Image (cartoon, rainbow, N blue to C red; front, side, top):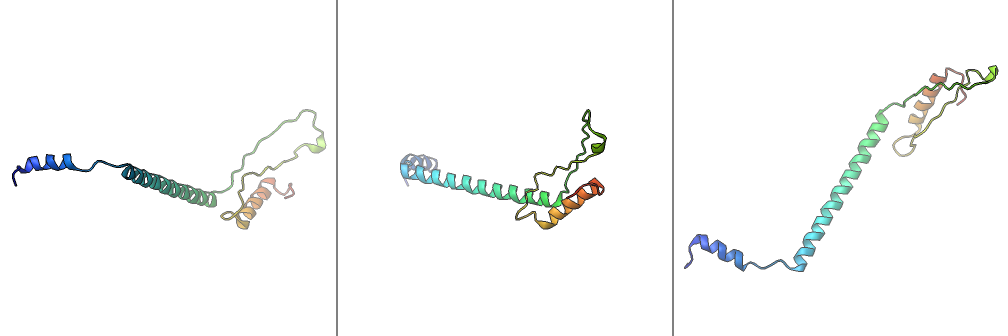
Amino acid sequence: NLLPDHHLHDYKDKNETKPTANNHQQKTEEHEYWIVTCSLLLSVAVVFFGSMIALLDDPVVNRVTVNIPHLSSENDGFRIVQISDLHIGFTIGKSRCQKTVNLVNKVCDGSCNV
C-alpha cells in the first residue's frame, strides 16, 4: 500500500459513485412509505383511544332553564330533552343507548316521554 491509512480514506471518498436519479427516487419512495405508514398508525391509534374514551365516559347532562315571558300556566315546568352526538355504531350499541335513555328518564323524573 503506497498511501498512508489517513489518505486512503480521502481517496475512497473522492472515488465513490455519485447518487443517481434512481437512488434519489428510491429514497423518496422510502420516505413516502414511512410517512404513510406512520400516518396510518397514528390514525388507528386516535380512533382506538377515542372509541375507548367514548365507551368508558358517561353521558353528560347540562340543565338549562329558559324563561319565556307570557307562557301559559299550563306549560309552566315543561321540559325538553335534547340528545346529540350518540355516534351509534360499531363501538357504541344498544347498551350505551339504553344507558342514555335511563339517564334521560332519571333527569326527567318521570315527566318525559322517551
